[in-house]
Image 1 (spheres, one colour):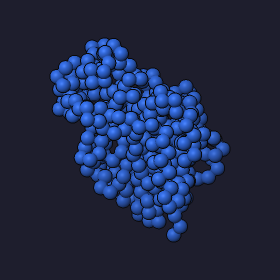
Image 2 (cartoon, helix red, strand yellow):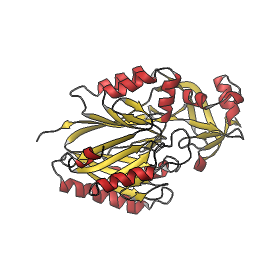
Image 3 (cartoon, one colour):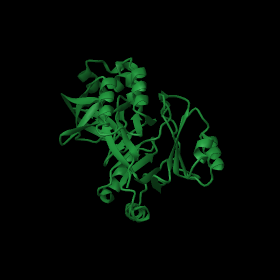
Image 4 (cartoon, helix red, strand yellow):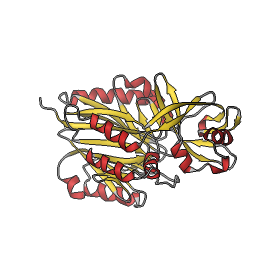
Amino acid sequence: MMEQIASEPLSGVFLFVSPSFDFDDVVTAVSRFAPQTRVAACSTAGEIAADGYAEDTIVAIGFPASLFDISPIVVENLHGIDRNKLITKLIRSRAMMKSRNPDFAFEFGMLLPDGLSLGEESLMSALLPALGSLQIFGGSSGDGQRFERTRLYYNGQQLEGGSIIFLVRSRCKCHLFRIDNFTASSKRMVVTDADASARLVRRINDEPAAQEYARILGLEPHQLCLETFVANPLALRIGSSHYVRSILKLTPDGHLLFSCAIDEGMVLNLAVEALISEHLDSFLESLKTKEEPAMILGFDCLFRRLASAQNNCQEAVSRILAKHKMVGFSTYGEQYGTLHVNQTLVGAAIYPAAEF
């Protein structure tokens, strides 16, 4: 890995680091070996490597300076964002990048927020006024299945509780995407008591949340567990689209802790799952309509990995990821457009460099 990083000038290096490694040792070693290269790193809930799903490894991706211009914006605290300052930085950086590399015709944004910060929605809201035509996607850092401590780093700075925004211009055509393998059923429920800041739901349909959710599934509250939540997420409809809301765990008080924004008055539908392997392969094949991507950078929800294992198709999914040249990591949440979502795969298909 070290030799590859040092082999050519890079606009940036991204490290997706399993929590089984000493995170500080990894970023220190890479930074010392390539001091002129800007290094970003985050901990994961699993990795996506050249052979598909991986565990206990480090995925390193370098972007050649001849093809990519990457400009970072660091947000130190997602709960203390200076919106005006952030918007100004983003607009100025985009203008400077366009002037610096006018032949780099393709542009997108990429986010790496702290996956335990509960602050992704604040980031998306702050970015909204400045996005314009800029498409963005992102993945929240992870900690395996422990949910204790996530790590985030950029160029010597530790950023727990924060985020890094990467503005990218390239000579390579880039196509951003969002997919999940769910449809919204006709089974509806209304959140009637919630703590939005904690993503905690206390009552659904004016009944205790766990009790009502279990009733809708035909279960008893004591039967609810992680496997139940993975198989039965909820869907929020916005216009003609739906966005997945996953339940993370059941609290001792019988409340439901969600993995992204939830609030009183929100109407949710029980989501119906399609087989993830078939759905994934069909979609990724559709990205090859004119030419095949040289690489797909993917941020895939941890719950999708767990669902594939529950449905005995994890090996098939892993082969599909490898076949389509996807690399990235399993996340605690995904960002696309202006929304933070769950149980979703987001990514950027990067095609061979355009000739001018």
